[in-house]
Length: 448
Image 1 (cartoon, rainbow, N blue to C red):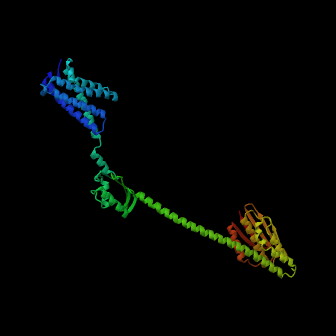
Image 2 (cartoon, rainbow, N blue to C red):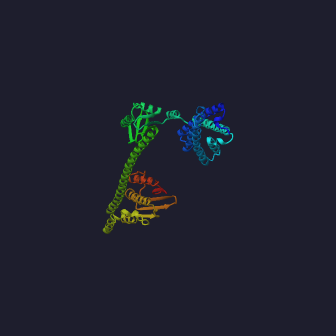
Image 3 (tube, rainbow, N blue to C red):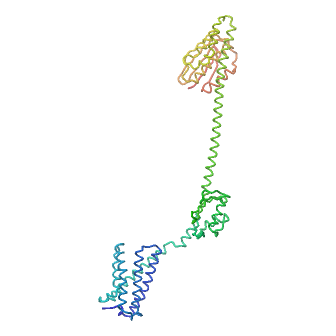
């Protein structure tokens, strides 16, 4: 049987040195896992292993040769704890190398020194655990190298465009990046002020040159730019974002809304004006129709009185009773000019109407107005006693020919009546012409 204490001094000193290094590596591993928030089970395992290794160093050092062997043997029973934890990790992680960890922990119990070559077995297992610890140490150092530390995080925050500051529970600014320092400097606010003072100054600047969006959000105009400050509630963080483009778009939207409202008001006013003009024109048309009808009937009545052969006053009475009904003859499709024919017959004028007006009311009204106007002119100025009206529907267009046997003038003069008719023809996509041979003829053409 080979006890550890019976090993050569050089081997024991070597084991002591490497056990110390291994204990240091285990301590580093515990700290690393705690900082990186590793699994609590692994931290407990490494802590138990470190504690037992320290026990082994103390009990096996040459300085402790006179230590009570029984006490040392019982103290080494502490290795049962990491041995048990290694089995738990084996079950949880499914890493079979944990079996070797468990064996190494068990063989460090000095009560097993009765096993032949025990000291050499423990030395071999120690070499294994030392190699395992070195690999763990290298892996941890590599991970630390790649892990973003405090200064790398600060560097990243300082380089970003968005501005940010962090406040502690006492209202002190614990960190403020370069971008926010520059923005506050433009506002004349020192970044070394207490956070409450900074917030108060931001609110004041927003009132002076900007606007308050809410109790924790403010927009301030700086030179040609706009910045939005957002404050956490409670005050733990201040952020600042460049919202120049958003503010410009909002301004354009508000301006467009204002212009649209003005345009809508102008449109409503224009529509009201158009409606008034339309009502006025309709009133003028009605007055014109009444005027034309009354003028025609009075003219016919005047001619009746001047006619020496007209002695039957019953005809006059009948004509006067038909004054009102003759005003609406354009409404009766198929009976165009019936009343007018009766009126003209009284004064010896023969009016013949061939054809029927179309369904379009505007065209039908115009045709009747045209007949009235041209008939009156033929009787008053041409002394005609025979008038022929011919209405033809040619499919795509309508023609109205009105011919009388009256005196043919040397030239045609457009009075108010003919001018009014020509203007109304243009409104309904029509045109008018006049022929003097062989009879005085007015030709109106209306395109559908």
